[in-house]
Amino acid sequence: MDIVQQRMAKAKAKMEELFGPGGFERKGVLFELTPPEFGDFTREVIFGTVWSDPALETKYRSIATMTALIVTGKQRELRFHLRAALRLGFTKEQLVALICHMAFYAGIPSSIEALE
Image (cartoon, rainbow, N blue to C red; front, side, top):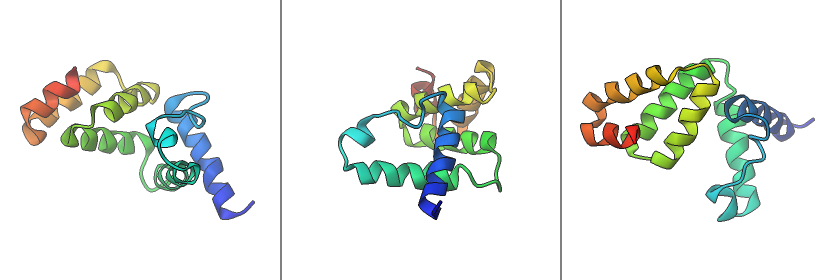
């Protein structure tokens, strides 16, 4: 198995951990509007390398990702990662607390939008 195949295997495992069975196969705008190689490269790098790096636990990566999405107002991606966080064991109360905490760093409007 070459390095790309190894990363794709890690990506599949990580995406199914985060997004459930079939999480690796999910399609979306990224895969519908770009060449297939771009979607594959994205999965390989983000989930097969970054998310799979043992230097930082998955739950911490999840918090960092949700925080970045709140701050940048990426609501569609945030909803996706909020569902993943629930699969990782976060409670709804913890996720609301994270969003409310961000109000004082990302701004009240960003937090209100994240709560919607």
